[in-house]
Image (cartoon, rainbow, N blue to C red; front, side, top):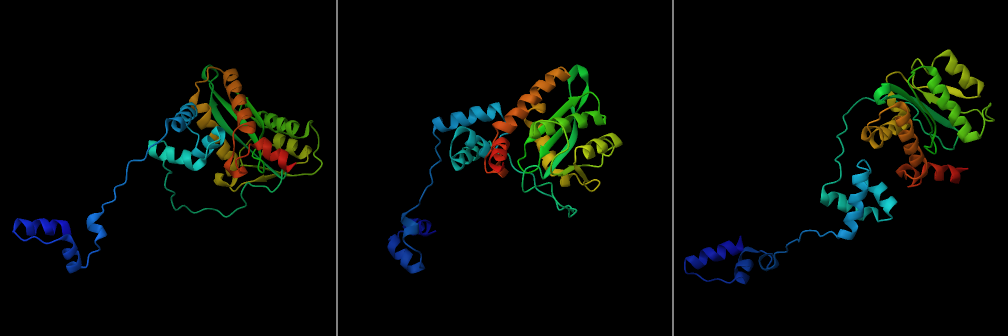
Length: 273
């Protein structure tokens, strides 16, 4: 404003210095003489290239996971994501009423497990059913089974695989713990409830139509679909089983988890045990 006023006075033949004009109008002199300009941020190629290569191979990875796997500072990686436009914006959360219930968490391994089913397209074999069992403390995927049948045998096979993976054999557990699931026909069937009871597990069921109460295994299913299922066109059930098995091994032993302080589920169990 002061500079424009000085130019106007000069056009009228009146010459007044900026110092006097600033004093007359009570404007700080530095605002007239100094105009700080912010340069465009610069990124080093040696930092950008490995980040770009990793997210091209794994588009669903967030900046924390990328930073941990590359051994880089997470703030640096986040800055690269922001400047390059690679950071996905979060969807706004709606104001929906939530049922107050105990979440699917645990304070120690083998305190609460969670299980669920989902559908996977397996090409020539059509729609298949995948059953998963997760430890709610270590977030380790202990058991899984993929089959063309959506009956209780699929969920039973995943549960027995989880017991073998954690305890080394099948049999009644020494200390009973909780097994959380929804109220589907599979988990409430006589065969499945009888099997869980024979192994000393105590079933607990979420409130109907409240999948957030089983949120831990629901989130794992979403991650599995984002990072494996939706990125691969499975030709057969066998092809799908190989790919899912490889991803679960990666998830348990290589993929860091923010809720576990950037540890893998296997590392979290080793530390807790």
